[in-house]
Image (tube, rainbow, N blue to C red):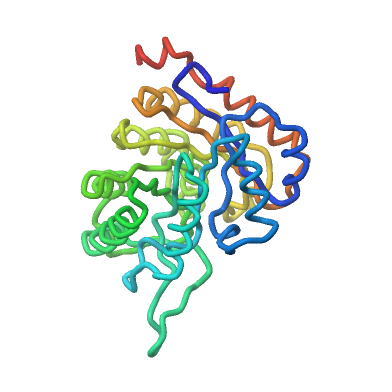
Length: 295
């Protein structure tokens, strides 16, 4: 059910909705799942994913490759992902511009979190090498997502958009732009003392990204705690993020490969219809094919 031939819209398929979605088969262009949840060699989870794959294109979104880690990509993790890609033949494979693996004594440990990286040439070299390794193994381009980050590094000498654009240029990967992450970061910068308008900051970020490298957008909710904003994926998309999303679809919707949009919801998961309503609103925000072509 692709919108206007340029856009596709899906939701994150989470455990509370496994059975209901297979039974009701709502009109969606794709489902996105967390890759690591389906690394088993068999069992009920993988069987369910095959059932879903018979009805919908599947997008695999990972949280464990730790692409920015100087310790490198975990060979076991990459083996499992390659096997899953071969089985499911997903429409997209994505992960984050983060690190999580590091050396502790004689061992390599995993932080089990999406930790931010410094935006400088050395970390860019590490990220490029790891992305290229994954792409060569999977024999397909990867989409790399911008992070919601709660710290920054004094050693950074590049802006994030330039850093990610250079990653895409050097490796041939695509970008997954999470517009909620942009807004979370902009709000936290305000709490840290920035006087720049958050909406202006996010739109300016989008304008610095080459339009042809963006293959997917993510939408989600967040929690404003009064002194920090947490990217918890536990509520509806807020109005400012919808405004940023409309800006993003107008900028990136001309892409020859089309532009996918995902609605994420990972905590306090509501009834399935709530996610479907958010997906419908995303479709309503997307420009028509004629507008996208003229933009």
